Length: 253
Image (cartoon, rainbow, N blue to C red; front, top):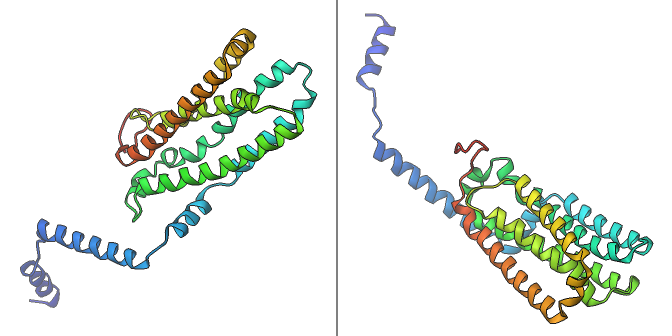
């Protein structure tokens, strides 16, 4: 018997059939070792936020700033003050729409399953991104409202009704679509935001509606919208771990 045949016969005799339970035990031990190694790195929440900040594309914030600058620049030259005021609602909707691609990018790129397998959960990642968008957008809006009130002589009521209220409602629509279990894509979110913008424009073209509603009513509506926005943001973060990636034809990946 030559050497090749002897080696083949030896392999057949020594063939090992791995048991499934042992494979699972090995996977579990490897997983625990990985988690312990990651925990020892002790990454602070500030460092985690900084990492998420670097992953967010800054062009969307830049476009938001440019949109508000454009509104501020053309506002004094508007021939009809009525349409100038009403256009603020359209710009407010556009301000929110510009963050949709960044919020939906993990779904659009079908990487939620990959992100869910990392050390940090999807909930933690979404929380960090929402916090960063919230801090920076609130800062941008605050600066714009301060400059607009001084240079354009806009009152707090005008800013609340014409800009902040439609902005918050648009954010409610955006985050409500994001946390929807049907898995609507970003096109649906943009479409719904644009429909709301058109409806808001048509409502305020009727001056009677604007002047008949008292300031306390506007403030109450704004507060209700703000509370609902917080609720939709919470739902978006809470549901992100339970959302399965699906193609447009409904087939799960």
